[in-house]
View: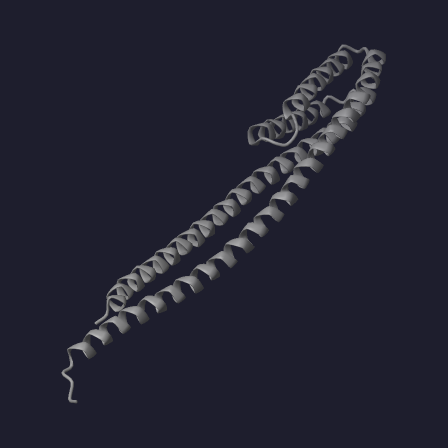
Length: 220
């Protein structure tokens, strides 16, 4: 056997080992990327649900505030005490929904909107107090003064809802892209792993077959 034959086989083995090591690294990277994209998808979905909940709270707060305004005007005009519990109920529901939105978190500064809403609720209390005291003219004037605040609050809530829903849409798009990427990476991982397994099997089988042949005595 020549010196070239002696050195060629070990070198071939090292190249084979290096190739399999590289293949293993590629497979590990593909699997890690698949898991990462899966985590991105889950994170986006979780954030999307949170912003969707915030939007729902804000919409509910806007609805309750919208129901409160005409009731206040009606109370000032008629003095019907039965309207007071309804006003208080809708006001409390609006505050509760706003609190839920702040707790959930959002894109905009909801605390500022809540602070403006709190001042508006205090003003409503003053309107009711004036009407209960019999000061119809004063109560009516107070209603006119807080009307712009009602409109501003309504606009702020609508804008906040729009931003939350836009964020939901962005997160949904991001989640879909991450899901698609994870699917393709999973397919690539399976294909690469299968190819690597076939290659390993072929090399092992070749090695075992070669040993058996070398042990078989020559009949020549």
